Length: 140
Image (cartoon, rainbow, N blue to C red; front, side, top):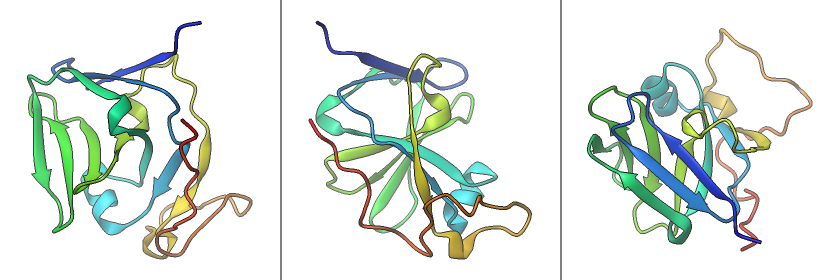
């Protein structure tokens, strides 16, 4: 049986990508930086870099968002696509850019201490005041 290929793209199609293997469940990040760049909280899955491939990068631009990380976006339509720590073996992918046939699960919330005051988080969902070292592992 062939391994599932998960595909995604920006709004205009100038950046397309695919992954194989397991994707990390979605993490919601409520930090000020993510809220500023998305207009709300960030919802992102992640892939091992070894399983990730850009299939069209015509519009891809990288923005150095901190001393240790960068963000990838489409320079044509503005879609926020990726977040990556320097020298990381993984790449975070905004969940909404994955095609609808990709089945993602939700894990929990990080940086809830920086959450905006105009929305609530379900009390039953996993929450961390800042980051967490307990992200689900890749089982590849």
